[in-house]
Length: 274
Image 1 (cartoon, rainbow, N blue to C red):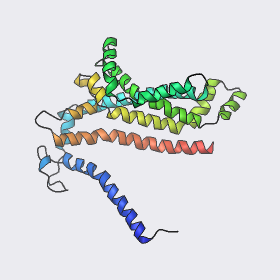
Image 2 (cartoon, rainbow, N blue to C red):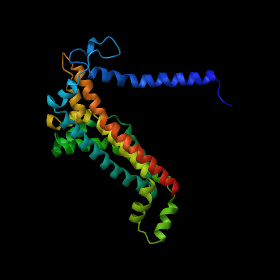
Image 3 (cartoon, one colour):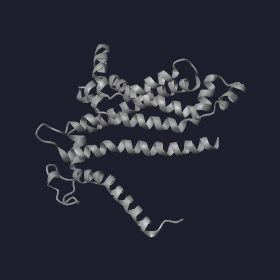
Image 4 (cartoon, helix red, strand yellow):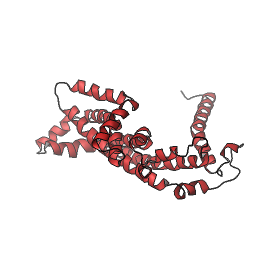
């Protein structure tokens, strides 16, 4: 039965209200970012009375925002890519191999994901200090990998479990090796899931502040999350410039998500055809 006009109107009203609730904070960030410095707290209407791009210009002239964004891109890309490699390798082994203690190992991996980041930051700090990895890009990447790998293992195992083993057995009968079956059969079919793991790792690393702030002190190695936090002072906060930095900070994640979203859809359709 078709819905009544009243039900459709209520449904559309709810969608509009939810959309406004989600989009209004973003809209207000844009309004404050376009307001001259020092006048962000004096806005009395929903439309900016004076529009200026000085805050965005100051990000790249008075502050090294380009360097911070570049550091974030490097750290997030390396962290997500290495986490994908480790997670896929372990997930495939746990999915295809049968050995004693596999279930216990999976529970241990999940338990590490449940632990808050604040509980491991001090041991990691002491470990990295003894290894000479403090205040280095390598140490920051290693710290972010520890956040992403546990869930990457669980997710990749679930994707490989959904792939019939008969496909790999048929490939091996035709002369394909174990490695060949993994690279040419399992990985292409699990491509949509691998893209999801990469996006999760990229976003997790991109938005991390605790590890980046604790493991790195040099300003030239700051990520964009550290840079945005630097706009907040003890007695005064550069609110307008901070909102502009937050918009610039969110843009790469949005671009990566839309690019990978198309790739996920195409990969899912290709997997269905196979």
